[in-house]
Image (tube, rainbow, N blue to C red):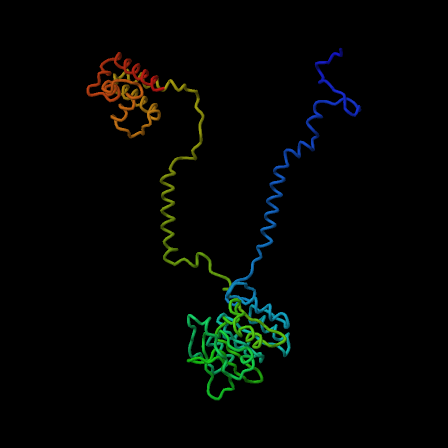
Length: 408
């Protein structure tokens, strides 16, 4: 029989016959142990990355806003822009300067479509009106009408609750409107001055929903509402045909100005009223005085280690010696009873404000004692029979210990 050395672990023959195999070989290599430890975090991280990628694929953000050319919401105009882009160039401008540059670069075959012109300054409107290109004004402001179509006035507004069931007939000889047919153009109505070279279409009681004014070789078309151009109504009636006919040019410059931004800005101090700023002075003075009053100690508070270690029992012994030297048996008795109640109130299911009757009843039920005797023990009458002499205090401590032992 072969003897095994106690200093070395036993070896067993390898199945391949290449030599002995130690016990560490059964635990696998270091890489395998690392994989066992890291596989769960790696799988969790891979799952989170996969979920994040899948969620990001459907999180494309589209711009929003009324008649926004990139909005897919019902009040946006992305559908119309896509249709126009099939056979003509659509250039979206966000400022009047961008619109001027796009119109200048497009040449002669261009139409300018202006939305939300109330965001433009009067000098910007005048500059756009001087471009001498065909223009479509969608629900223009009074200032815009004065710049592009002098004399044209808004004379009414008609937008009934059931307008989606009542398309309006063009009733005019304007080719763009005649080819489109009935359209849902309810909104603001306009009237041209006498003698003006203007054509009104889609007439209603107070005026025309579409008015085209010619002058200086160009035309200005006023449309009283942008609803026919929106995604919600573009496929109804002749709305789509009307929009395509009004914007019949090689290049459509779509001007929807961004909201004006204030240059610079006031600081927080400037926005505060002067009275509030001056009131901070007495408040700061009051805080300084309060700090001086409350911080009158010399130097900062620092922890100080005790010169000696005092046993916890010495406090009890010292207080007992004081009580004994002054004959304060009543104080000692109160301390014994208070300590008993504080230690066992939780076991009795009582709160700190429990009445003496509730405490006596609970102790009697748990220990089987006489309620009357427990009442004299815990809440004695005056004079206290346990404070007549030192032996009475010893009896009190012994009985309280006994009750505590029973409760435990």
